[in-house]
Length: 201
Image (cartoon, rainbow, N blue to C red; front, top):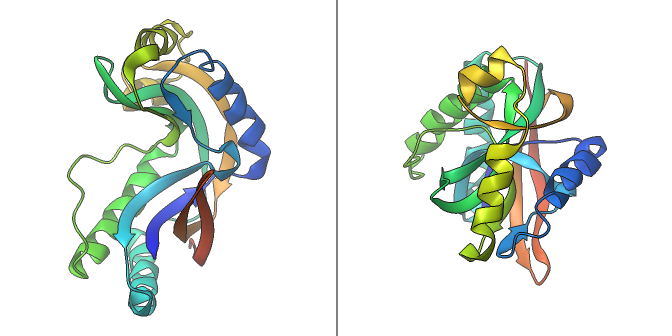
């Protein structure tokens, strides 16, 4: 089983996510994610034997409890890339508000899963929704231009989390649960299925 831990965007925001992706439609080399499967990954676990799922579920329940995070609002907005604009591998949508709670969840989950032997993250956590992956650099300049030329968002929270970032505001939702999700690779891309839902608070 290929597993990750996530919080999911509601279906109601899928059209807005698709609209943002549409602005980059002419950028060759981008492979877009399914807007109806939009999510923020809190922890990628990789291949996991199915018999380990019960201990993993217990660890996640403990982590969510230890995080102290209760249901909270998240506003999605702002654009960014990984690792940087000179070499783009991922185009992403950020969060304007709710980043602190997402980080608390990530840190608690990171602690509990690494204690089970899962690999620790090799980079700092940046809460984001992956919009597309860049498979070749044909459209890199267009992506660079769109990300840097998009009108800035007037938000102190965004300025604090992503200095200099620009982009659209997609919408707001309340995060009430964390999900353990299975990803199955298919001919049309990955298909996600919820294994366990862990409520906050």
